[in-house]
Amino acid sequence: MTAVLEIEALRKRFGGLAATDGVSLEVHAGEIHALIGPNGAGKSTLINLICGEMTPDEGKIRLMGRNLAQASVHERVEMGLGRTFQITSLLEDMTVLQNVGMALQARAGGNFRIWDRVVKRRRIWDAAERIIADCQLEERETALVADLSHGEKKQLELMMAMALQPRIMLLDEPMAGLGHVESLKMIEQLRALRAQTAILLVEHDMEAVFALADRISVLVYGRIVAQGSVEDIRNDPAVREAYLGAEDELC
Image (cartoon, rainbow, N blue to C red; front, side, top):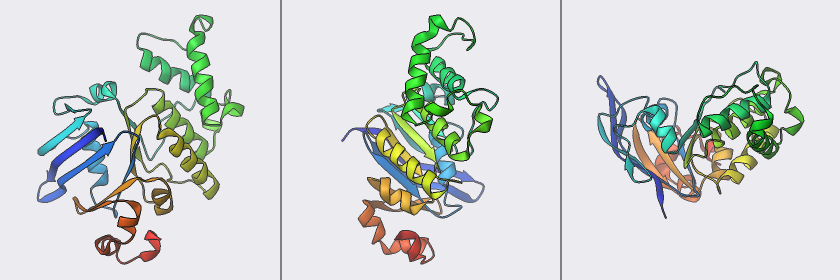
């Protein structure tokens, strides 16, 4: 399978602490690859290294075969790296439609004032409306983002990131703060996105991980201690030990 993202022997130290200690993994086209591990395992550091917000001490990161060593955060986005965050980053004083329109115009480039010459930008608005329908928010199109529920904001942020047509999405705990019904909606949405982009999923909700992942990597104290299918990870004794023997978390 085609490797969209390749991480090879990646290391990052903070003084005497190895936050990322020789991590290697691949994410393939059409795949949801979950990254799990206890708090303090180094997951956030790894994501920040991939995004370019931190510089590794050693190792390589490749996106579609291109070395990212010298690429800025912005350049990585242009190359096809997308990201969502635990805390949503939306323009809350604007409507759902305006937020999506801004994301689409960012992809198109050039100067853009979202209120100017709407008729001439019909293609952008039509595309924005399709994206809103895809995340089942069409009834909220004219609502201010500040008035959306937490789950609706998560859905909207995900679809705005997808408007940039990334080759891979880095999802940082998309289930955080969601209720059961909202989590089920998010799982359904992420399943549908697999056909459009590869996904590296960082998530503590093991029910969601097992429902979505094609492969799982387990990170503990900066090291990958196990990689494999859902069944491989369920039955790996090292994984259970890493989770302090909490078998319920892996059921």
